[in-house]
Amino acid sequence: MAHHHDIPIPKLALLGMALLLALTIFVAATAENGGIIGSGRAADETVSSMSLGFRDRVVGGVEVVNANTGQVLEVFEPGTNGFARSVLRGLVRDRRSRGIDSKNPFDLRRFADGRVTLSDPLTGRTIELVSFGVDNLGVFAAYLAAGEKQS
Image 1 (cartoon, rainbow, N blue to C red):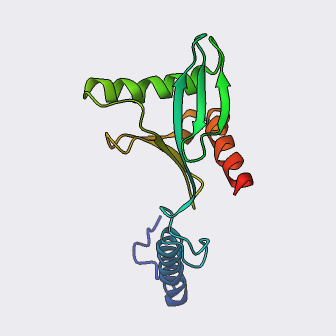
Image 2 (cartoon, helix red, strand yellow):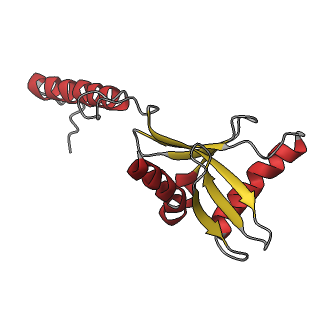
Image 3 (cartoon, helix red, strand yellow):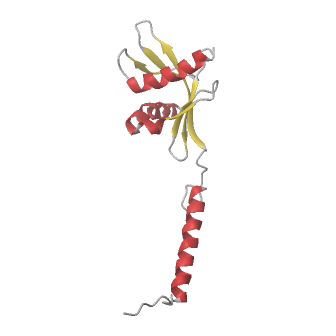
């Protein structure tokens, strides 16, 4: 039984593989930068934003407020909105540990790539809301949608 270790590979097949590899690298590189596949926007471009304030209510609820207009967007009654409350508590706890007043608003942003973040401009902390799932992301995305309708 003879073994053939020197099986020739057709040059046309090698050229085809090299072209396919080059095309794959090109598409991956341009798609990453919003090229031929992308939307033409940089992924980190803000497409929608809002300053959000949170106020404690006398009866134990929390008001979500558009900090620019003063409009109350939602009221979290005691025992509701666990995800939003926990995000808020984390941001406020971070401010408190640094001795920062909690009355300043937070920044809510939607980016061209679909990400939505809630950030604290005073501490530099940013929370990528999509990492908590679509339903939880929807809680904050609804505030941006409400703000866009008013514009």
